[in-house]
Structure formats: C-alpha cells, structure tokens
Image (cartoon, rainbow, N blue to C red; front, side, top):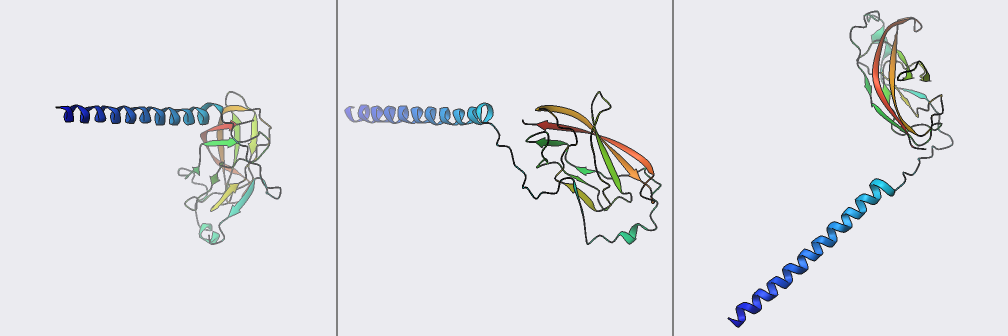
Length: 179
C-alpha cells in the first residue's frame, strides 16, 4: 500500500503542476488578448510620398472594342466589386483597404460619390472608372475627424458618350478614421 500511496501522491503533484501551468498559460493568453484589444494603438500606415492618390488603374489586356456594340443605355444589370468597410489612418490620408472596381462584366463606365448618411454632404467624388478599371489609393476630399461614419456610395453609370448619367445605384459603405 505504501507504493500506491506514493504513486497517488506523485500523480496528484503532477496534476497540480499541470493545472497551475494551464492557469498561467490561460492568464498569459488573456493578457495578450486584452492588450491587443484595448491598449494597443494601431500604427497609422504612412503612404509613400510618391503615391498617386485616387488613381484609376485600367486593365491593359481588356479590349474595349467589345463594348462598341453593347447596349449602354440598358442599366438593369450592373455588377459591383468593392469592399464595404474602409479604414483611414487619418482623415486626409489614403486608405489602405478601400477598393472599387468596374468589372469587365459591365458595359458602362462609372464614377461615384460618397455621401454622409443623414446629410447631403459629399465627402468624395471619384474620377471616371472605365470598364475593367479599378481605383486605388483612395483619399477623401473632406478631412474627417476620428470616428466611424455610415455613408452611401452612389454609382453613376455613364452612357456611350461618357458624360450623360443614365443610371444610378446606391450601396452602404462604412468608413473608419483612426486618428
């Protein structure tokens, strides 16, 4: 019986050590989570000095001649390719995650306005984005204070002449300004 008691004592000691180690590891993980969640300040991404803001990039491989016979007056169908949550490290700097594309499945060139919800205030108007193009390094025209903003992104579809607006589409967009 002495041998069994000794084995049980050793087993109890090992279990106590494992429980203490598990508690220490859990406390450490919880501390790291709390630090990242509540205390760590996001590091603002500084754009390179040679970044061209609000730059439209076109797909060089896209043959625009396929649009010559397309019915650009029919705006019943329009594909949207964008992300709906944009983050700006500062209200005057370009966003690292804002993205809007005019996919090749569309037949109309577009531009868009961003309007603050509950107001008529336009905080950004894009350049024209041709079919197959996308917009990068988007910087707002209005310098917003730090906070979260609900906005509407309003697409304007252009006719064959590239000037007349022949259709519109609105999408919800969330904007976060960190500082």
